[in-house]
Length: 244
Length: 281
Image (cartoon, rainbow over all chains, first blue to last red; front, side, top):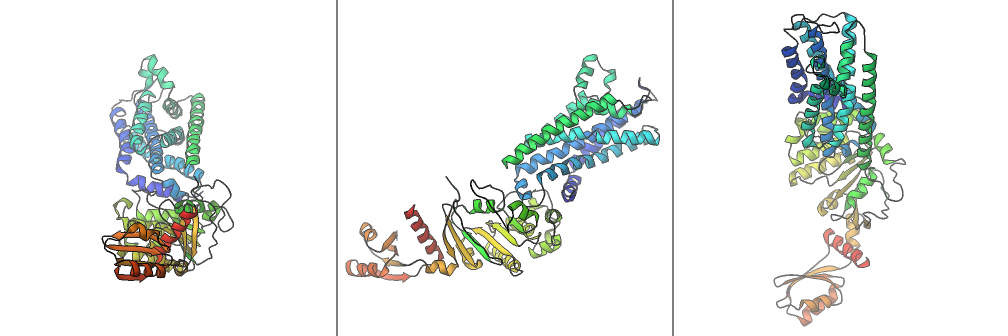
């Protein structure tokens, strides 16, 4: 696959300070607020509260980074940029693939930032196997949100895409239990949380730290969300390409 | 309503061809079909024996569209580098910038450029694939006279390398000075096709300019050999198919004086051909 488009996107994204601040500093700050001073408390599943919050915030960071790459689509779609791209060998599918890859690349920085803070400020100690599993699940957990970003990118206008993306990210993170553990909330909030993909991606990533190991049901739900959101995103993309 | 119907052109390699015509003549549609941006209702389009997409993918066609279509917050070097990175056999991006005369703008964000500079960036993006055919849709829109001249100089450096150039314009002087061949379009059809001088020669007739106080315009317009009549105060401008006959009338039957007669320039030729087309339609 040709990586020229990914490189082109990345260089501009890194220049976009607001995006970087939102996707890296926000999960980092939330971790520092909620994840430190836990005094060694443990959740019912046996993992430390600090590790629990670290994984949740890492997931939130990778999710919001993934969503932001879809926002760029709305802007690029509006200005006739896709016409210019049609004067190059880049195939429409390669464009979308490049955007999904961009989601995954953008998700790396917030993950690393939160993990480092987890060790340095939260006292989180994991073995290599646990780190690998946590990193992998919270990184690939960005995929359903890459699909959601794609949908927003093809539905929103350049003016509306930022508020829509921001609001969706916050709603999904808050109701999905990434900001505050749903385990400590009333039943109705737990039921709502289960309706969001963020709950299941968080659950999958956190479960890798429990003695019971990865929650396979949660993993399946994440896969289902990825397929559904990816499918809708691709349909929007195809409808848009046919019109152009 | 068809935008384009039955455009039949054979363009040899190394030619510089101008498609000339007023807005709505079908210039852009013809170019968009050639580039695969618009599908024809009937028939098919082939460029170098393949579909427009395949010709572009092979790096044989570079194009510069009219305004819009660029990511405004990208840097010039990034834009040209992207197009280079997507094509199979590009020239280095910095070389394209140099040829377009914007080697010093590589680090500038596209949004901050002037209109003429933006067009040069588009030009660099069109030539960086090292295409055999360069297609330009109204390339000098928004350029001042100086920039326009520099642009066409850069353009000619490319044709000297054997590239074929097809450009749409509504500036007559551009077609006249820079194209080997002019294709005149109107209402989606080709009205004339040849060198600028062939097109001028193909139009018979002259223009007469005379001062005629209290001229009877109706009478003048009705004269045999008169195509159109215009007035500017006492001055009458007559486009004539047969200027001798009109002159005789002016001298014999009116008080016309300060009479001038001249041969058509390309603009007159275009008008005449367009009017002829109108009359047929």
